[in-house]
Image (tube, rainbow, N blue to C red; front, side, top):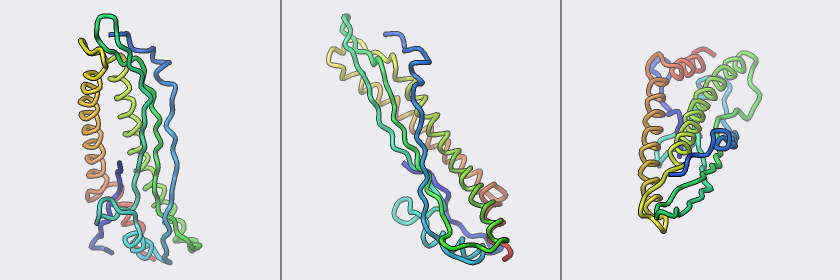
Length: 202
């Protein structure tokens, strides 16, 4: 799944008890950064290059940056003597990837200062998405471990019950990310300001 900053131009320039908490938290997200090449000798040229080369979300929409994640689980279901089935453990493996632009040529001292401010702000924005993704996984873990369904000797019903919960959690995370992007990219928002500071002037 992806969350990203969209390209846009400004008129100015453009039943078992759950496992103990300590046992459940023996994991940590792996974070990595990928870059794509851009060119330019001014802020407006760098931003135009982002518009031409930025990664796509869907078929048409290009982004300044985006955050991908890959999530897999190791789960253990156990049939109970009373006929129920309980999910007794759920260990996630989460890899978060931030995709960011990177100039391929050396920048002038003044432009480098502007670029450094811009890319630091963009990375902070994407890292907030990373926190939201990690929070989602923690919530999935919370509702998963100890989940039990009666009359489920083959552990089929509990999987269906879990999927319903996962759908709700995933939708909530997407809405949270969307609301954050909308706030950041609105007039006067942090991303709005980053873009204007980059493209205005030399």
